[in-house]
Amino acid sequence: MPLLEVRDLGVRYGSVAAVRGVSFTCDAGEIVTLVGPNGAGKTSILNAVAGALESARLTGDVRFDDVPILGDAPERIVHRGISLVPEGRRIFTTLTVGENLRLGATPHGGSAEDMVSVLERFPILAEFRRRPAGLLSGGQQQQLALARALLARPRVLLLDEPSLGLAPQVVGDLFRAIADLRDEGIGIVLVEQHARRAMKLASRCHVMGHGTFVQGLEGSDVAEVVGAYFGGDALP
Amino acid sequence: MSMLRNTWIRAWPLVGLVLLISVLSALLATGGGEVRAASMTGLLDVVIVIGLYVFVGNSGVMSFGHIGFVAIGAYTSALITIPAVSKSLLLPDLPGFLGSIEVSMWASFGIAAVVAMLVAAVLSVPLMRLSGIAAAIATLALLVIVGDVLSNYKALTGGQGTLTGVPTDLTVGSAALLVVIALAVAFAFQMSRFGLRLRAARDDEVAARSLGIAVENERRIAFVVSAGISGAGGAGYAHYVGSLAPDQFYLQLTFLILAMLILGGMYSLAGAVLGATLLSTLSTVLDRLEGGEGVGPLQVKLPANTREVAVAVILLAVLFLRPNGVMGGRELSWPRVLGGRRPQDDFGPPPPGEPAGSGLVDGDPISVKAG
Image (cartoon, rainbow over all chains, first blue to last red; front, side, top):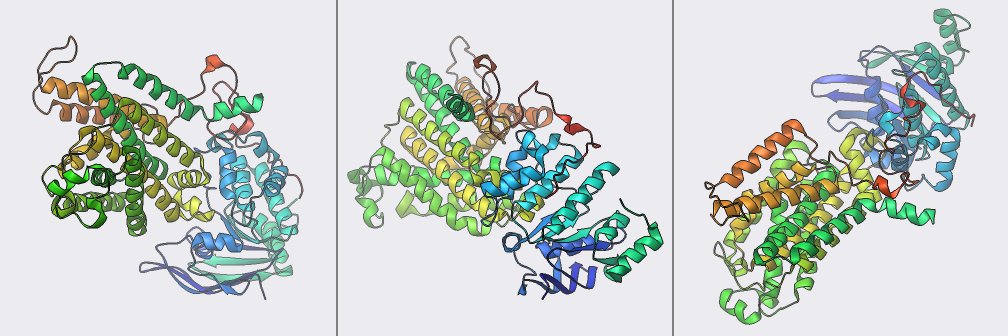
């Protein structure tokens, strides 16, 4: 039984159907990517899974550990073990780095050991913990957003365009960090416009268009498509 | 030694304000009767503005209903401190034990705060599901409802008439102590996990929810705490003026208190205190000049309603020129003359003059340790 199972998900904003009949799964220690053009419905899917869509009408079924979670309050979903790192990082710019991290703590995560572990992973955050988070660079803010989400000890991470607005070198480092998290057993659903990098990391990839999946790739197919479209040495 | 100093510096936004209020009150308490009366008005305004700040400042949600809690506190305190003999004459139909109960002024402050908190706890269930303009209108409705109940529940409040006989035993010292308690509660709240979560939701509600912050619950807690402070402020007011009427707690006071919060800056405790102090002083001075009483050497008679016009002009000027208020959302900072750096904590912006770090360029590599 998969850790996260999305079955026939639909998202409607009034009369507009943003997502139709989307199904996919994500297991521990794997990366599933959703790629596609702007407006395809990728962010709506992540927000629907995370419970962050208040005004939309949701249909279908989302199960985490075989428990239905679609429509649950976002805090309940976080406490179950799903954390969303939203598009644009959404860190609290007027609060300090330390305060942002404190906000990541939940009843199940955020102990002193968790904090030490996260700061070891992202040492720059320890150095800048007293600074307003708005003064960090884009890459550092992304680290903060990831660190904050990790403090809740998620079993599944939903990452929405984590590389948006970052310099190429920083994007490489970020994707290595994402691969590390996967290797530690966290399931990751990755929405990314850097399709080549995202597909290279993924064990499964879903290509979206107009609110639905138009193509699904698994295992060696992903590598084949990456090779065919982007060249064999696509990624370092 | 360094830990002790850090604790002091961390508590400075509170300690500084407490020192300021204490010194100011001690000086004003030595003045004549009129100065003492003006000081008490000012101190009670500070309490009420702090009450409003705890909710509005931390949540970013506007409330026009807090004067309703001030009224609830004032009437509660009056009903349990007016001597039983007087109550039997003034309010012969008073229900149950209220006719005979008599408590001390300080006990009535506590009870008034608790009653206001209970009312707020019940009302917060529907109200805190709203935000933005809907919340503002709903809280305005709360003010209207409280006003209507006070005006029409004759057996309990005496209706639209004036309820007299409240012991006027408030002193400048006890008003100052009430401010200090309100400051301590407000500061403890904003430094707590609840306050931090609420400020995060104020800055970015979507991000806060994605972290599992139950925004409505956090707002409810703040609403109840702020109603308690407002209720205690109302109780203090009752023991200062000695007589209460429903129209004392309506739109005029609501807008004056809001103007105080906006003037000082609604996102800091220091702003709330400063705004209340400045505008309360100005309001008292203009009130006296309107009445032809003069202030010291200034002996002019101003036209009626000059105070309202002046408050409106100041409010407009602040909103245009300094929308974040005089304090700009900042708390009192540790005086540099006392030396050195800020504490080794994670509250507040970095010290001025410290390098901004390498973090301002987007090309910085992410330093990731392999996990």
